[in-house]
Image (cartoon, rainbow, N blue to C red):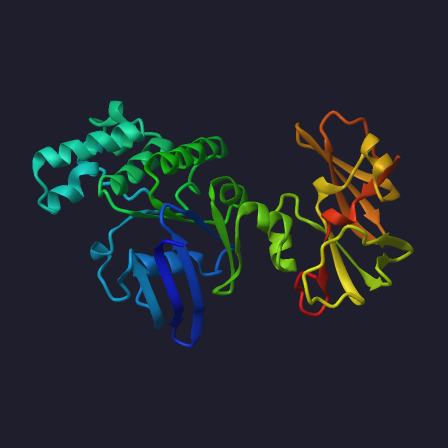
Length: 359
């Protein structure tokens, strides 16, 4: 892979606390990589190390084949967009966009050209004479992105840029950032704790936990073949159902329910017999006419229904475990009635109880 960013054996310690642990990561040229994880997992810390805002304890960072481990942020060829817009309130949008360029003593014609290009790409030309106080949250965030764009760099770093916006604006700006990437083809590293943002934007996702990368792969890989129970639980909304049972003679048994494992692809070299956790996503449980062709069919009692408009989430009990099913929003189903479900083992995930690794 032609790499834009290469991180080798990176450690970061604050006193006796190790925040990043022997972390290795390669990000290809023009790739959109998302660092995803819960609060405190080290994703923003890693971004700040790439940006040069934090000094690393060990390891190296290369950007475009240049070792920048100890280089100043301004020497790294990056543009950064923060969660807070960090705009100068006394300056117009145009002033905010051109400020860094004027400080860098660029020619006036060059500054005007860059500001014009960024404002066209982000569709903020009508706002150039306004001050930040006269802009909406979404417009301010566009200006903050524009300030990174005018630098004309190869690598953009985004630190949770949409988390201050309401849900509708977040969805709109998400689409704009994706379009921006398709248009510019720059390398983008994007930090978020929002898995929908990660899944929709990323070429690849790095799921982080306690300063380490748990899994690095495409959104489809991470959703379809999570490497461990933590990743499986973290990705997907609502989260995956887990059943604790045992594998014997090619079948998974939980309580008095036996599910043959025909069609399930085991990871090569993984032990199969013994205590095991089966994970099934609510949207992979078959209902209605689809149940007739399911390898395993089960009757459950509907306990609770959560309508979300496009879907209905059904809460029930399966073999003594809480179990959720996603159905079509128009499905006729009522609390207290019986519901027949179908399970296809080929779409399930199996995890070793001791190591929590995928089988």
